[in-house]
Length: 184
Image (tube, rainbow, N blue to C red; front, top):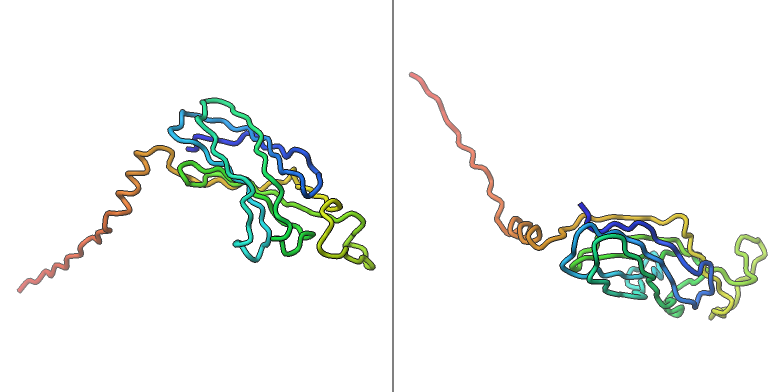
């Protein structure tokens, strides 16, 4: 059972200029006292084909976390546009949470960046020249359709130690004994 559950995540300042920071108001419930901090990350997926281009925009530790409902604003700088192969394609921003370096929550949002005066759906649309004028690029996060993924983890050190010991023990194969019953 998860000891931390996200109750709500609001995307603030949306839509906004591409260069403005990302802001997420995170509300979560902690069911039991934790003996370590929670690590929150904001990751911008710069290219769906190349994970090495992902940009970690923010990485913070939150703790100690009291039992009950908790709320904070997670803010991250805008990504470096020079590291994004095609700025005007749909992409993803991820908000993840980990406990003792084990990710247990990932919330993904689609992000649409549009250049002022450019509508790619029109047949005669001419893309703006690169590099784009970032003052004319608008970022919109599709906040009403997040993709939430939860991962089971061990929340206390005793469970972790037991799992580690079980993994370290060699798997013993049951022995098979053939018996021959002969009568003369």
